Image (cartoon, rainbow, N blue to C red):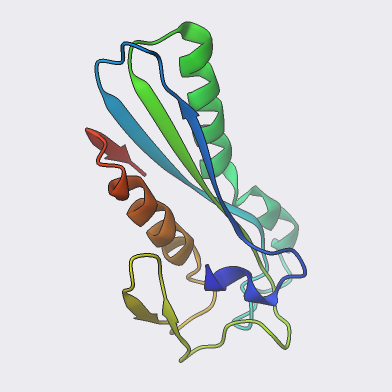
Length: 138
């Protein structure tokens, strides 16, 4: 999760799961959780920057969906993958032209550090597919 390289807070790929004993299927959910998105080295304009703490809504929705499935006692296993990172500029941040290796071994060239969502989601999607669920939703 190279997106979080510029942050003092390391990125995390968090797995939350609900698995009833007689599950009729397995759904994997993957949510983007950019806790603050400055754009990294490809920094965003100052206008509207204060709203960039909302870039974690996908991960929040995934977390609460897993909790709701458990509270409702649904007969399906639900695994949530929360792709969490803070996209900040610093001397350790990823740069345009960097090549990073995502989970599973694929390499990706970073052209714009403000296109971070697809990078964190890639790690979560690979992790979700590794468990061979019946359905993956991102």
